[in-house]
Image 1 (tube, rainbow, N blue to C red):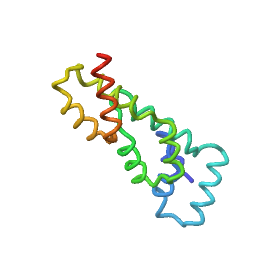
Image 2 (cartoon, rainbow, N blue to C red):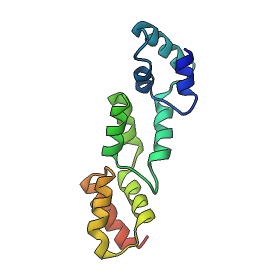
Image 3 (tube, one colour):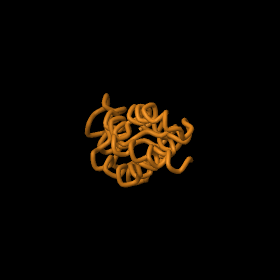
Length: 138
């Protein structure tokens, strides 16, 4: 229990992260502990997703592909990851990322596209955000 609480004390964690962190302990004890922590609302995947989004969106934003891959590597369930897709407007996040990095100049379009795709945005979202960014002069 002490190892779990120490791990949870720094930041919001997903259930999968806690399971992964405690994988060296007895499986049945870990299950019991996690259920107890969920009942006390110490582990809450929805709250952890909101915390994760605050960090990973905005001017230094990441796209859905990148965020989903990172969450899967942390052991987050597909059901929880599906919450992420509902909460994120990828074109808006891409637009925020562009406005923090570029001036709205047509000649920078290929560079903007590479930048967004490397951050995990879909091709459609990248094209949409670039079009909007160049037309609005954000």
